[in-house]
Image 1: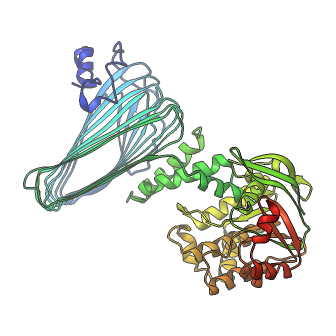
Image 2 (image 1 turned 120 degrees about the horizontal axis):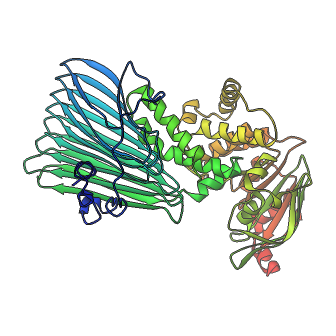
Image 3 (image 1 turned 180 degrees about the horizontal axis):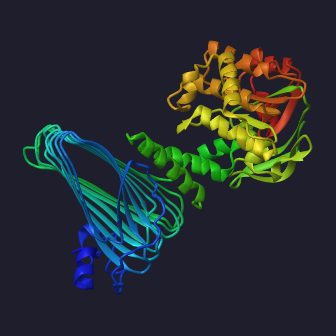
Length: 344
Length: 249
């Protein structure tokens, strides 16, 4: 049951709907009444992407597939551009990434909507051999009327480290899902995200981490802002299987709601079946502090600028956790640009 | 400089200010003293444009400019500065960033050029040193985790950086030990000038030993019920506010 299988079979009942517990806030079946034609091969100009890197891999309209392997000990910084170029068409694309023992990959992944109103699903399989290190930064810039699903399966080996930061401005419906098989064994996971949503945009950041062995750590921090009639969804599930002792897992989700008609749905879940673990989650949803806004205005800062400044500071904590410095700069600029344009 | 005429204000249905009339000429420091609940903080908020207060009658002007017609940030750009009784913590916004944003917003509003980064840093280093503020502290989130005394010193630092025309100090002495009180008062006194006016709101006379007022006013039940020279503050300290509470009622 997925967008990709519906595209393959042409069967609308294959679309996830609110009857599926994990999709109840991101209903695709209720939204998509007919399937558009499949996206054509695209030959036009795709411009430059948001990230600069020595190597760039590009997948346009889901055509072809990306298969990337890093040999043991290799270090690479790669920009991966996943582009939806044609309006009112649909496509599904696949990416497979294998990172060898002790190799290091910085993956600068951009989802770029050049066309309007497309349907896109990108499925990623990411495998980290022992002691491999991956930092994945995802900048999702979908078109406002697009339906977009990004679905990543991540498998860690002993001693591996996977760090991820999602940056999204949403779409008509957008789901960015990450599932991680965590073997414990000193493997380390960071899963972060920022959503900044206005107008009628929707973004769903869903994750599931399964700790299967002793001695694993997970740190998760997602922050978001919703304005106008936007809707943010956060679903975070951490499963600690029997025997996965000494697991240390922390999950935080914090959201600002800046309008009466905006909505945030959050579902943090810790399912713990082991005894000797340290797990915690925190979830807060609130508004900007009006007293702080008056304080800033009394110093001469106009109200809109004060609101943007406080929101930027709120999500800044997540930006600062990005390790790759040029990507951190891109993230900072993205936040500033989103808040400048956003009607808050 | 500051001219307040028959100012009435309320919060929801509760009248707090019931006809305040006050003139503070340029170059003078006036103190407003009064019991709790007299409307001292309300006066500072109404003058600076905080939401939630409704002015029902009267006027307030700064150098002939109608303050009540301006937004809070426009009033700041005209040179009105309030040192808060409880300065806010702004996590994630370094003090330097906050002040530079404020300074440039004010300069833009006045049609002036923004200040360049090197000039701003030089000024900040100078002012921080004179207030004995560790420069590293200015790189941390504004007021986050600061002690009461540090927050008040940061208010004076902002004042020195923004160089306002008229200062309102709301209970600046609260939460200060004697050493902090001296530093803060020296900072305020350094800003006294023939072009600048100040309104010092305080419950206790102590602060006025350090910041010497030209005039002292007693605010009780929403009105100025007595005015005099600095000796009035000493008299209040000795006698308390009781007789004014009954006079106002």
